[in-house]
Length: 417
Image (cartoon, rainbow, N blue to C red):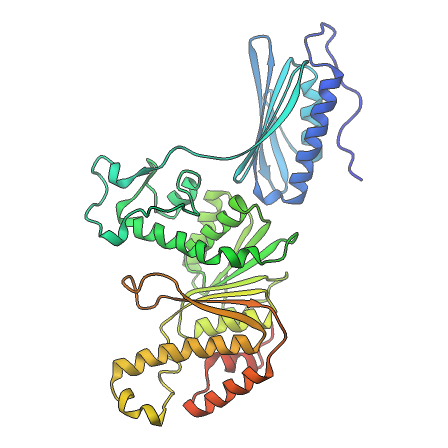
């Protein structure tokens, strides 16, 4: 049982300070803040307390430090746990006429105000300044964008007036708060990415911390976007893990997470086959991982018994170098057609194997083929037990095409996770 506050309050004899009834109401609200912090401290940003006595203001500021609060008030800085921080704020409130407590989380501000007459709490979503399109700028941005690059007439999932810190960090928005003309296409792409995952995200287990593993994360831009959306829009507790073989991109991702204050992220420079998660993984993501790296990520998701696998494949060469099919001999002699057929076979057989492993699979167009021919997204949700009939069909297809796909190989070789 948590004991939050002391019972002995130090009231002023002159009667200008808040009465015990108001202090007790403040204490109740602060207990709620304590619960929020203990439930999910990763989204806490800071706490700002303003006291008044007459015409004077006295300010206390607390920031996160190693699961505690670094709190400065009246020239004194202390590192306290959340219980003692809120206990101090409650006790100090008795010495002043009014108090305003601003508790800031990612995407949410909670304001508690109190005086001798009333104590109230307001919970609001954070909204930054208004969006200014690059089309309305002073001409300093890059112009000449195509029709496919314009801001769309749609209700964006990643709203620029609320996600400005994120969009600035990933280079889509200027320091002045304008979507850059040469990044409008990218802004539309990341928003469509979230749109495609909306239903998937809603199907994930409730009342759990959702762990997302990004395999071959690169600079992790879309993972940062998904983190923002899950945490600040959907209000879901989540944790993100990014792995990549490149130490350079991992250090870059760590710096971005630090700049944004996204403490619910970790990054590791490691080969996917050597990585062993220390917690339940709900979602495995693989975005534009080249060739068999996509297969490694899908195999990881299956082996981890995760709830969802998202893959945007790239550079399918594995089956291209293997397959042959006599009835199509006259067609496959044309190299470009054989390559395109290999793309379809690769992603089709990946989808079949996921179905055989008990996933409900959909293959959708990720972005317009005008942007890139590599525009498919495979979405797989674990819904049932393995399906032997689909596996039999898959094995038969392997034989007909004379192929041994990387995904099947990774699932059946001695690779334990």
